[in-house]
Each structure stands twice: as structure tokens, then as C-alpha cells.
Length: 197
Image: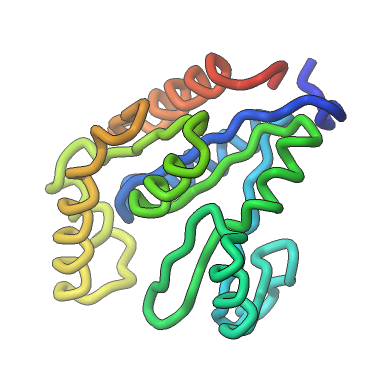
């Protein structure tokens, strides 16, 4: 039976999942979290304004830029980056608190953030999610119906650049069939986790 709470005094494992937009990493992470009671998603900090329905401390830790930059200077972030004018990051204290409670922690971040985490937490397990091909990635992005052709072209170019870093990860999963990819991800988690899922 899966544990519903972490054990005090234990130290949970740290999992970092990366992959380009359209690879399916967000859906895979959500499915993994549903199946693993001992796994928690770390809540990121951001300087962007909350969207309708978002709750501080649940969806993100919403900070003003001055506070965020102050925390960067104090080395409070495991990783951080600025995207489209807004800063995002994973606070070390948030991750450590969950791990001390015995939870395993999941970060869903880009390859640059994953490299920052690996530098500070060498014990982190890095997993990279790949699409079966660039053509399939383009098809998925086009199928969303959210972006213009030029935006999709930029996303595909960015994805190709990101995929060049797949070998930096400890494990690579090609998401051709979602259920097979999820089974692989679950298997890696079970193998690397600190205890019962």
C-alpha cells in the first residue's frame, strides 16, 4: 500500500524531469504524481502576476522582482531563469523541507535549470523526455492549435537545441506511446526512490 505521508528523519530523493515543449513531460509528470503518494512536485517561485484562479503557495510562490533578486543574491535558489521578462526559480529551502519530511521531490524544469540543480545536488536523478522525432514534435505543437506557424518554427528550433542536451541526463525516455513512456518513468522512480511509493 502506498504511503500517504513522508517519514520524519528520512531524506527523500530528488528527481528532475526536462524535455522540450511538446514532448509530453508535463502530462507524464502529472500521471507519475497521481500514482506515487510519496512524491511531491516542488512549487516554483515567480515574479509574474497570478493568473485567474491561481493561489499563492499552491500554484506558485508569487514574489516581486526585488524580493526574487534578493533571494538570488542570497543563493536561496537551486535554479533560476528569466523567461519572457519574468523570473522563475526553485527555492532550495522548499525542496529541502520536503526531503527532510521523507518525501521524494519532483522538479519539472528546462535543461539549463537541470544543470544548475545537478551542480548543487549531485544526487539528483535527471530524466529527459524526448519526442519520437522532430516531425512528430511539430505535428503535436501544430495539433494544439494555439500558435502561429512562425511561433511553432521557433519552438521546434528551440526543441532541437534542447534535445542536444538529452545525454546530460541519467535517463532518457522517448515518448512515442504515452503509457509505455509512463511505465518507463514509473520504473525509474521506483528504482531510484528512497522507499515505498
